Amino acid sequence: MNQFRAQRPPTIEYHTQLARDYNYYLKLKRKRESTLFIMASSELQVKANQLNLRVENEAKITLDDIERNMLRPIARKAYACVVKCYDDAGSKGASETIENCSRQCQAPYEYAHQVVQHEVGNFQQRLQRAMMLCNDEASAMITPSIANDAKQMKKVEDTVLACITKVVDDHVKQLKPLKQRVDGQLKRSS
Image 1 (cartoon, rainbow, N blue to C red):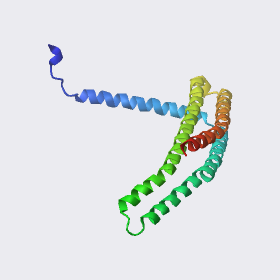
Image 2: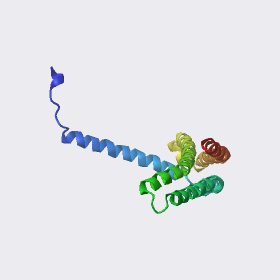
Image 3: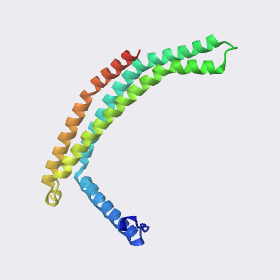
């Protein structure tokens, strides 16, 4: 019979405990972040930034190539098709007809854009997950005694740098297959 009893609204004590738990969580989170911040020497930060620039530049080259050689021709066809919609409708055609025709003309370009966005999003997620694994590996290596020992911290940083370098190398290699997948999907759809 107790199961049908009306539940009381949460008390002030309940909310106070939630606030304490949340503050404790934030304190642990800050402590973890500060541990990672201590670990990141200026030398490691410079090398990590260089690796980040490398993957960004390689991705930019690939995406520029996709845009120039795959998306622009599709966009050009879409615009030419829209112009034809207006030419066919002339001055007496219904605006709904022009809108429907224009929408159909732009559908292949919108699809192509979605394909590229999907592939780029997947690439970014894989890269982010791989970087998080490097970060987790480093965090797992750090103990209070290691955090206070510069020589040991250097080993941790070297491990992190090796991991990040491998991730960047692997992901730069994934850009060519990304481009091939986009090309294949766009060819199948046309």
